[in-house]
Each structure stands twice: as structure tokens, then as C-alpha cells.
Image 1 (cartoon, rainbow, N blue to C red):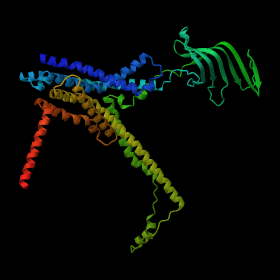
Image 2: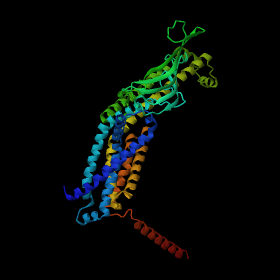
Image 3: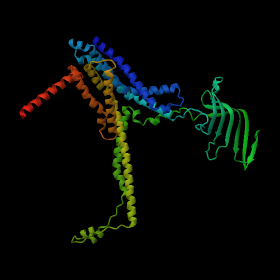
Image 4: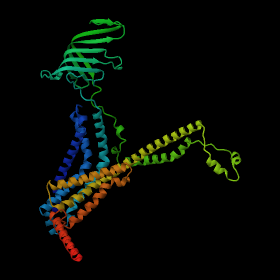
Length: 501
């Protein structure tokens, strides 16, 4: 490797990894802001939260690579141009394309890595990340008692606390609760009402070591229970009978109520339930699914015509009957046309019902076939994106390297602005192409490759301008051109005035 190649590569890798890290961080912050309501009060441990961020960081790499290549290549050649290193290379007989050769090889390598990543790692990360996100979203919030408000998220219980007192004496047993009211609902349903209530002057709430059970340690209270049957109840406490129902009161000084936390926390869902999505498939699986869906669509469309015959009723008259009604002079046609057909009410109702059945059958088939066709488009679109995201890296390199050689500005000022503009352009064109392709408004390959088809000619044009040392972005060029245009316009007006006189 020559020194010039080491110089260019050394100035490329620093901005590349920095930009990649910044873009991944921005996308992760976007994820946190979008799902912040689902993360709050879920008591996520650091391992679960770390795994979620790791999976989604992997998912953002294919999106971040084009921007990283664009900005780093623009900064590399911008710095070379700003410090006249490009000029020195050209004076030594080294062309711009020769100076770009090491980064061109790197861009091709990153494109190949992006294709492998999209085809092998992204489906796995999508499956793991979105299944974990679904489990977090469906998990119940942690137990959070508020003063003076009934808490009803524990199955079978309604709990109210008058006051919570924080104490550092025994933090393992939780904070001190005063004025507890606990209603126990029968698990069979609410129709039987509340048949047990616990009142306590104070208590503490804590969980066991495995966070499997919630324990309420209650002090100085009463447990009131109602029994609807007339069976005898043998308690050491007082009891009263009223209208066939038994009311039992138990007085306690120290009582522990243990409640299962089975309904709380994260429960892992079977990941096979998410494998149907196109983002969870590699190129081979997408190709197989697309082929099977197309065959199923073709088979269904061919069966519609033959199956719809069962909704029609045919009645034929014999040839003898037809011959008796035919008039030889041919005037029977006019007479038939003048008559108004009157059908019996039963026949009209049967025809109406048959027509409604046909309409329902046709509508359901149209909906079914439209869904199948859209599924085919989605799978085809994702198959193309395995390639388009890789090719976008090469396109962004052409634009970035050419723009850097033209504007001759390094650092994080103008290059960052230019890179963001082109990246937004790429992102918007990709979204537009995907939307039109999924809706059937564009041919799927055209919608998938729209962004690259638009930006690749721009990259070639900028490369051609950079090779010829174009001053495309110099303000003086446009000022001089504007002055020339004004002089030509003044000369033209003067000549037209002389001709008119």
C-alpha cells in the first residue's frame, strides 16, 4: 500500500466510525422517545434493557452506513482540498480517480458487508428485538400504590393506602403504610360482590427474593368475611348471623397476606409467532414465500370463475316448445319487445337473494386476492431492499467524494449540512418508492430502486465536475454569470430599440 493510500484511508476511518456511532445513537434515542410510555413503570432490569438496545442498534446499522460513508468521504476529500493536498496530487500527475481508488475499494467492501448484514444478521435482530419489545409492551406495570386511591391491577384485590411513610430503619421490609383497606374479590367474577375486607392500622409491603410473591405484613387490624351459606363456621373470633348470611370478624396484631405476582413482569412470547413478517426473513426465505404466494394467487384467480357457476341457476325449454311459439313471418320479435316481463314475487326474491350471494362472493374474493397481491409486493420489496441498501452505500460514496473535491471544505460544518440534505433526499425517496410499490401504484423493482436511480446520475455528474475542477459551488462563478447575463440583456434591449427607430 502506497503512502497516498494510507493518507486517504487514515483520514477516512475516524469520521466514518464517529458518524456511525452518532447515527446509531440518534436512532436509539428515537426508539426510546417513541416507546417511552411502554418502558415507564415496567421495572426493566438492566440486562433486558441492554438486550433491547443491542438488538435495535444492530437494526440501525444498515440505515446508518450510507450516511457514514457519505459524510466521511466528503470530509476526507474536503480536507484534502482545503489544505491543497488534492492540488499537490494533481500537479504530481495523480488523478482524482486514482486518489479515490482506495476509498472506492473500501466502499465496495462496506456494500458487500451491508448485503451480508441485511441478509443474515438483520432478520435475526428483527425477530429478537421486536419480540422482546412486544413482551415489554404487554407486560403489566409494577405495583405502585398511591395515597388515597384504590389500586386494582392485582387480580382479585383492590388496595388503598391512606399514607406512606419512608423509613430507613428497615429498608428490606419496604416503606411503612398507614390506614390500609384491602378488598378481596372472588376469582369467579364480580357478580357475587366483595365478600372479604381487611382493615389494618399500618403495615409493610415487600417481595420475596425471587420476586414471585408480594407480601403485605399488616399490624393491628380486622378481617371481615361474609359467607352466603348456612354452614356452621368455627372461628375463635366473633360472628353474627343476619338473614341466612354469616359475618365473621377476625382480629389480628400481625398478619401476612401473600399474593402471587404471576401476572406481573415480562413473559417471553414464542418467537415463531413473529416469523411471518417480511423483516424476519432472509433472501432465500423471501424468494420461496414470494413464489408460493404468487402460485396461490394464480390458483385462486383461476378458481373464481369455475366456483362462481354454483351461484347461477339455468332453466332450459325443450325444442318442441320453442318451435310452437315461433311465428314464421318474424313479427313475433317486435311483439316480444313491446311486452313487459312480469316475474312472480317468489322468483324476484330468489333472484335478489342469488344476486346478493354473488356480490358477497365476488367482494370476499376481491379482498382476499388484493391482500395476497399486497403480501407478494411486500415480500418482493424486502427482497430488493437487501440489494438497494448495499448499492446506496456506493452511490453515497460517489456523491460524498465528488462533493468534497468540489467544495474543498472539511470539518463538521458545511460537509455535515450537505450530507444531511442528501441523506434526507435518499430517505424520502426510499419511503415514497416503498409506499407506491406496496399500494400497487409502481412496479415493485422501480419503487425499490427509485432512490438509487435518482441519486446515481447525480453522483456521476458530480464526479465528472470534480474531475474537471469545476467551481460548481463557488459564489463568484454565479455572480460573474449573472453580470454577463445582465450585460447581454442590456445589449439586446439596446439593439431592439435601434431597430424600432
